[in-house]
Length: 423
Ligand code: AMP
Ligand code: GLY
Image (tube, rainbow, N blue to C red; front, side, top):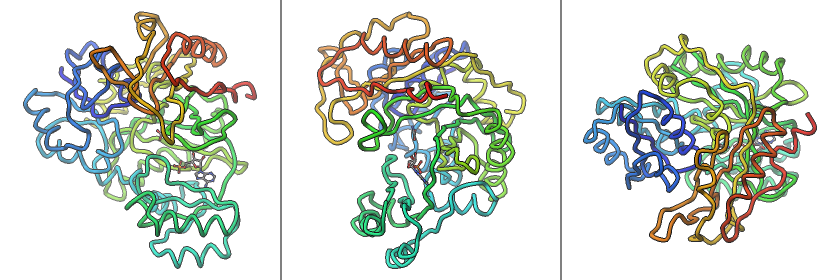
């Protein structure tokens, strides 16, 4: 069969690598893809938001299955348009992707269905928000309602910062339309865990847990980024945590979406915080995490296509989802200066060292094929990933492999997975 993947980051490279392992697959396309994806798929110069072109391409090439990796096209309704054209596609429809697309929606859903999350209020009027904040407990969390590249969350230590935050989100519109509405949320503390799942509208199957490192600098300092590295599984995701989430969060979310007439098919990503009072949902995403996919998918034993098709067909209950009993660590190699400003276009050396080395992967995020070879073309450039028998071995392997790669302005965190030592 022919498979089309929509997106261009490390996550889509990890999805493509998973798809490529399936004996059912003869040909992979990626729109728009990147230089690494181009080694296993045919990249087509169509942007992820060019819905008409994607539909036309899928029809012309008789694509059998499309997998949408990114949030923007999902929230924008690409799945609906492809389905309307009679195409088979993996991902939530627009009315279900709102689980990620609107934080106000997801908070109201959790409240209505008693899914544990931080206390909150939604506002569409900055004056009302300011009035509420006068008496709110500090620190407090402000979240732009819509998609903001993971940057629309402000943690405010006092009233002054909170007032500034309301201005940033709702008046200056730093995150654009995403700030037309805003959630004001109780500040929680605890460890964060990412849990990805496959969902077919009614059944949910949980993947192995992971942990991201969102800040740019060692010691979780510096600005928020798209993610500087991950490990899987999380040693903090214990059996007790898993039992609690299965009882109160996972199926409850799927059932709530179905009850609202918004059946969810695709991947639900649960961003959890393990608080003193038990696990709480920080956020939902309607897709694989990036760079969570890079450590979770290489450990999945199932044929990716079988699982994806079961989600579409509503037969996920028949799938026995299995993960290898090992660990993986992904260290992101970024361009110095990310996430603020950085240079691009530097040649990348050493990529061939990953060819045919079992258990090591170099997922491309911001790279471009040029006549001079592959060059850097983004803030996050590569996700160097390695497996190991346990987390410590995987971390040592991943950091060793980061030395195989060289490019000007190469930057990485040196403490990805440090939390493992505390487990
Ligand atoms: P989100 O996009 O909602 O996951 O928020 C981004 C990051 O902000 C999370 O990964 C947390 O580190 C932090 N955060 C979000 N909500 C809260 C909260 N209620 N309390 C403390 N930290 C939070
Ligand atoms: N790694 C967090 C995300 O994909 O949103």
